[in-house]
Length: 267
Length: 250
Image (tube, rainbow over all chains, first blue to last red; front, side, top):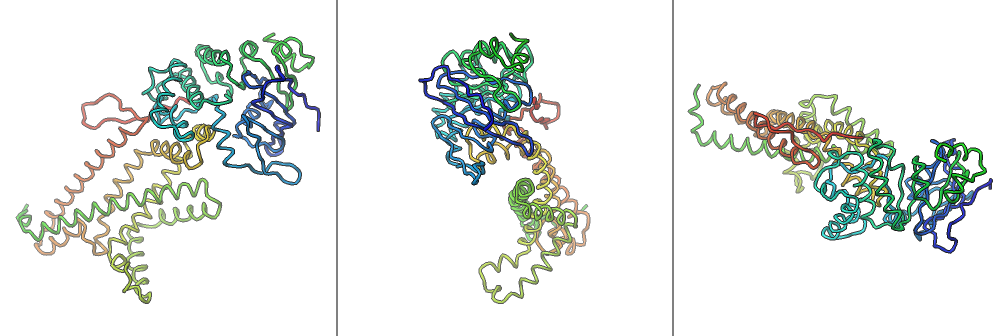
C-alpha cells in the first residue's frame, strides 16, 4: 500500500458513521481515488476540500455507492458493505438488497438539486419515505411538512420545483434528504450552482443542521464555511488525502505545501 | 345535396357500426402501440445489444415501408399463411385470426410502436440524468426509478408530439376499409354503391372525422394541461389554451 494519511477522529471513543479503508476508484486508466481512508464519527461534520479533479465528489459518491469503488473497504451507517470481489481483491459487484438498505439510511443533497419536476414540493419530499421506507401517505406528509417548515419552504408545498429559485430548490432538496431521517447526510457542493445572493440562505440551513449534531459529510468550495462548521476537514489532493484533521490543523498548521497553498486565500 | 338516405335504418346501422369500429380500433391501437413504443424505446436505450439492434431494425422497417403495404402484408400474406396451419381453423383463436379487425389492430400497433417509440426514446434521453440519480440515491428500486421518475418525465416532455401521433393514427384508420372491415369509410362506400351518391356520404364521414379530431385534440389538450408539472399560461380569446412545459432551470 502507498502512503495513506489516516484522518484522526476528533473523539476516538465515538462510534463511526463512516469508515473508509484504502479506497481506490478508476475511470478507465484515470485513477481518481488512489488510496483514501476516512473516518467520520457519529454526530460530527466533515468537510472535504480540494481542487477540481482531486476526487472530492467521487469520494462522496462512493459513500452511498452512486459510484462503485474498485478496491477498498467501506462501513457506513452500521453496514459493512459486502462487495463481490475478484481473486485480486478488486470489487466487481455488490449486494442489491444491502445497497437499497444503505441508501435508505444515507441521504444526499446534489449540486444541481435534482428535484423531480413532475412532483410538487410536497411530492418530492414524501416520495422516498413512502416508496422506500413504506410510510403511509399521512405520516409521510406530516414528516414532509415538518421538514419543509424547518427549511422555511412550508408555504411552497403545492408549487412545482421549476417555479422556485435555486436557493429555494436546494432547501426543498435538503428537506427531501431530511425526510428520510438519515443516519448520514451527504452534501455535494450544495451551493456551487447558486447565485451568490442565494448561497447564504442554503448555508444557513446547513449550519443549523450541523449545530443540532447531525452526521454530515460536505464537499464544498466555501472555505470559510467549512472552517466554521466542521469538526474535521479533509484536503484531497490528486486522489490522496493530503491533509486531514481539525479545521485549525488544515487551515493554519498544515505542513503539506499543496494544502497550505490551497487554503491560503481563506487563511 | 341529397341526404335523404340518412333516414334509412340500414344505412344508419352501417354508419354506427363504422363509427364504433373506427373508435375501437383507434383505442386498441393507441393503447397497444404506446405500450410497444415504450418497450421499443427502452430496448434501444438500455437493452442488451442484440435487443437494441432488433428494436432499431424494427423501427427502420416499419417506418420505411408504407402503412397500406404493411396492412396488405399482414392481412393477405400472414393471414393466408395462417389458414394453412392444420387445425387452426378449429382453434379458439380462429375467430380472431379471421377478423380483419385483428390485422388492422396489429398493423397500427406496430406502426405506433415504431413512430412513437422514436418520439419516446428521444424524450427519455432528454430527461436530465440527475433526476434518476437522485431516485437511486434515495434507495428507489430501478423499476421505481423508471416508473415513477423517468417515464413520467419523458411523457411530460413529448406529450404534445404524441398527441399529434394519435391524430395521425385516427386518420390512418380508413385504410382498413381496403381489407373489408366496416369502418366509417367502408360504410360510406356501401352507401355510395347503393345510392350512386358520391359526395354526400364522403362529406358526412369527412365531417365525422373532423369532429372526432377536434374532440380528440380537446381531450388530449386536457391531459396535457393536467399533467403534473405543467401549468397553463393565461387564458386567451380562443377556447383552446396554450400549454407549456415548465421551464427547465438546470
